[in-house]
Length: 307
Image 1 (cartoon, helix red, strand yellow):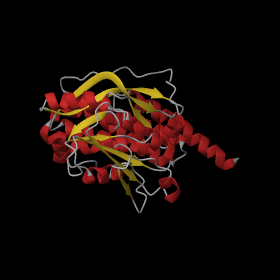
Image 2: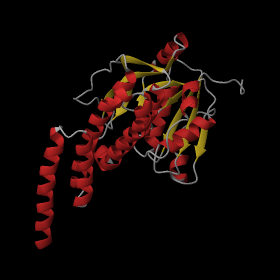
Image 3: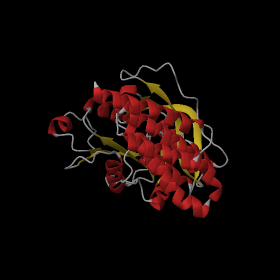
């Protein structure tokens, strides 16, 4: 039995927070579908954290010698060590409902043309209590690639189940993109395979506004990197997508500029971001509001030097 290839490989990147990792693993163990392997990739949390992991005997634990600083690298490590026909990436602070894998495996088994199926989620706080404001279920457009370029409707890597052949075709996560490597991966997968959306909530997505704000600059910069990367092939293969890409890039550059001001970055850096937004979409009101805010920001910084 030890040499039997599992249907699903569950890959969990882990860094500190052993209690979250243990809750995520327990959620996998409660799945009604049981033909899976669990691979936990610890991103150099330290021996004290690793000792606290409660993993089943058959689970594979990979401990990285150096911290990567991004989840895409441990995810790729787990992918390379995996054997399953389907891949599921579970963030350590998320929890699956018991029917998640069974539902998604049935979809991919029945539809060989589909390379990725994803479900909906319920936002919860750190105690797993549902938050007041929930996101409506996703709806797939006919052109799912265009839809993904407009916004990342796959909110967390914990939602999809991915066919191995599709993931191998695009080469896994791009380690160069720090905080939006998942969005970049969905875009690249959408170029080569069909997607399926399940409106049912099958993931508890632990959402912390404070945690998100701490890395907001990196997240928005990552989104820009993902879409700038997409421009290269879209100009050659799908020029009809360029207006959507340019509008979204203008939006992201504006939001990036506002975050730069909140983070007290230098004025020339803010102006470069706003100029990039203007170049992509000179008609968006966000650009002009951004320049107005930048002017006020410059005045405030000037006053601070004299106080």
